[in-house]
Amino acid sequence: MLDNFFLLENIQKSVYTNEGKTIRVLDQVDINVENHEFICIMGPSGCGKSLLLRIMGGIDNMSGGKISFKGNVYEDGIDKQTKSDFGYVFQHDNLLDWRTVYQNVHLPLEFDKKSNTKKTDERERILNVLKLVGLDAYEKSYPRELSGGMRQRTAIARALVHNPSILLLDQPFGALDAITRKILSYELLKIWHREQKTVIMVTNNIEEALLLSNKIYVLSRKPSNVTHIIDVPFTYDERWTNLLEHPEYEAVTEELTGYLSERSEHENAHESQDNHSTVKSLDHYLASLGDIDHRVSC
Amino acid sequence: MIIILLLWEISTIAFHVDSKVLPSFTDILSAFQNKFIPIILPDLLITMKNLVLGYVIAVPLGILIAAICAQSQTLVKIATPLIIMTLVTPVIIIVPILIPFIGFDAKIKVLVVILQTAPIIILNSLVGFTNVKQEKLDLMKSYGASRFEIFRKITFMDALPRVFAGLELGCILSTIGAVSGDIAVGDGGIGTRIQMAASTLATDTVFASILSTCLLAIILFQVVVWIERNVIAWK
Image (cartoon, rainbow over all chains, first blue to last red; front, side, top):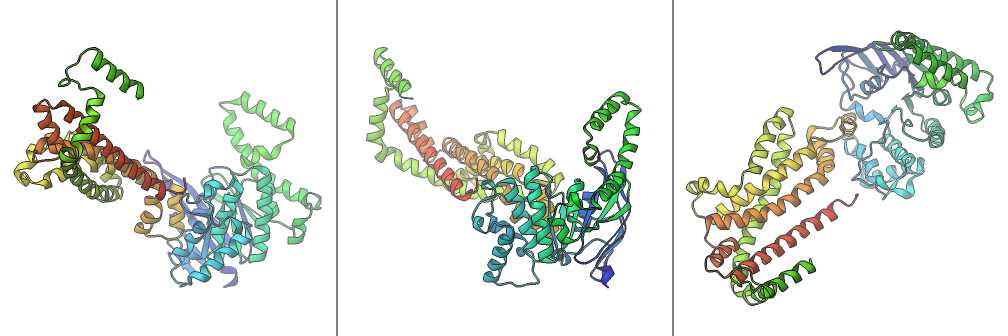
């Protein structure tokens, strides 16, 4: 039971293009998530990592494979009742413009039919999660009145309000500026620790993945498989200190960068056949900046 | 506006224009003052009754038809050209077809208003209902929401500004529909009044009636705008 908390076996997914072609995006993906873990999923763009997350959350169907969750097996994806055990955060906050912050956070409770929460309890829960993300003073504001960071905080509060066991985050800070991104990352770390949630996050950012996760799954280009699993060795307390000075930080970063750039170089080699000079000069340029991260993560 | 009215006033006096051809603006105002309550108002009220009744039926009907059409892509493709066809066909020329079915009843005027108003409401609502961001629909899928819940909580609300744009246009068109109904069917109403006054060369009454119709249309339009502003508070 315990090691079957959230298990994805052999997940396959094909999509149909407009020209009638079938493209296999997910080949055979296996992921094993333990309770209270923080997992990051990384991979080259277009590898289907967001799609994988959508399958986990029951937004998209899978073409094959099975999902086990809390001892139940789902062959056709997570069912309707179980969906209330997931909280989903999208890349763009995806708030509903016509609802206030309070009403936006209320949304998941409107579908949580099994728990007949009273109005007063609902209010308390909503105010609690708003307090958790530091927005309790803004319950009556409309999304247009909020900054990008505040909007994404609201989205996180909305994903937490129905008390799900698993949080699914699809590049949640991708649309934010660097500083807000950093602040929200630390807040997410705190929330994860305090609320004892299981978090699965798709990200492009190595630094962010190392700061937050216990385990990083690296996907290949499509049709994708899990090629590497990295255990992140930092304890919770160490994450609040300067991780750059951690003895293992450099090694882990290099390992992860290596895994990610394997594919990236393969990609470059592929492209260089028809666009040799441009790729080469761009490579030189990036190398002169010593900025390997950018090449890998974008 | 004031300059145009002044020019009008001065030129009708300066060029000795016959008031049966073009009355001066002050003539119209005095006709408005003298004839509004005894002659124009009763007819205006008949037209207004048909207009409001037709509009009030056309609004939910239009939104409902759009909501049904929006459920399937094929339906949207079939419905859109049909709606545009009804939209560009002047309803006044359909009246002769309708009379054998309904007769010279007041109902026919209400029907004309509905036919004139509903298509633009359908068209605007349909555009709104079919252009909801996929991400918002995904959010609802992540809750396992039913089709009806998705429509009620997302699609309808998201489309509301567009729906209101349709309601405003519909409000303008419903005035046109009501007056052309009067003209085509006869039997009272401001359209009939304008026709009668024109045939007896009571040009000042014609203009005063047109003026009252415009005022009525503007007031109704402002009512719809006021409702919109109160409903869409988040903009």
